[in-house]
Image (cartoon, rainbow, N blue to C red; front, side, top):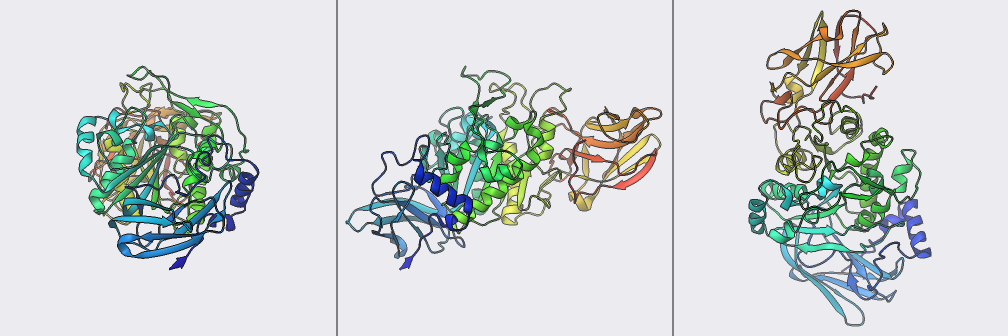
Length: 565
């Protein structure tokens, strides 16, 4: 028998968490407080039958509430004859208890029962052990499986995956962190046509489902998926005050909302938008989950930050949010890895307007902390899927919501298996250039096999642009230069040549960028792809280190971030 006091373990590790407890003791919960109507003996709201708990070597945390502080709670895993005990401690507004299970290998089902001193018992059944993933972000992550291409086929086949379990957090806000969810949209459920695809933008997240299904097919053991999403929300809403402070942003609360839809939904409903207030979704839809042991997280968001001034902060706010989630999940559960794998989808195309070169391109670059790829020195154990070549301009849900989530999830899975599970040997991202050489009016861009893992396939002549200085100063700045299209004039398996004459006489080529448009190409027809797996090359920007000249050679230093001019 093992005595464990795991709940609120982070409160002993983090002054921020201590302040949270203090605030909750002084002020009851916030909007939709979880304590309302739940003052008896119960598991936490997100522990119910059919759930997945984190498998060994990590240890799963099980916790709940009881009104009588000081009472002893006994928790048993029946099939394993394991028993644990914990005393009820004073929580923010009722007593709380928590145990940390021994490491339990993937499998099940198990029955977990908690016994109170007064003889009352509560149980959850059909509990599996496997890997638990959190899926979060705005509407492209919220975009449900019934909205994707071939939805009927996907939904009808979902019931065969009985070892994948689904849970959806209800959309709620709070001005203070909640120790448990105030509401749930979908309790832990087995997949079927209803639980996987109830209704548009309801549940379940298509990217989350397809990613989880891919994990299950590859790994062969149970997968638990937690959908906590809200359309039209900025990264600031999902970030703690501590994370925002690291980026110089104040902990302010406003009533702002973000709306970015370009056309009405097919079903005639209104724009997908959500709260824009700092930390309100962190408080209500992430913080309550911290005590659960999880394996990793995936993220699809950024559209709501693709405007002034938010987009200029994203190279800080997004990595800071990842760091903060990791710190808090690890501290609260004492079991979630402090560097757990975190994946994200780089923004898809949106409007077919070819003149839009700010907003989405900035966010795509900032999603990588300005390195252009992941993992990188700033974002370790982070993986991504490039989706800029998957636009859906005729989507009935608005062009910002492409229906092809299968390719998105497949690309995310490919990189996730490598980063999160060390599986696979082929490239997980499209090729990146290693050097740029100018000789007269020709600029050669070389992609190394050692960098990309294979050769390049060129599908279009368009997508590259030169930064041309026009006033005699060899600087790539808005006052001294402009960006002009640089068509591809020839290719070979590792190198493509660009027409350098576009800069004109007495103009220097001082920079190069690729796919720097809101929608840089039509479906799967950007310029550069890998030959082995047809992954698109990610967008990039590089500024020439030399000050002048019409002949140069330089190697791109991918170990350092490149700031956008």
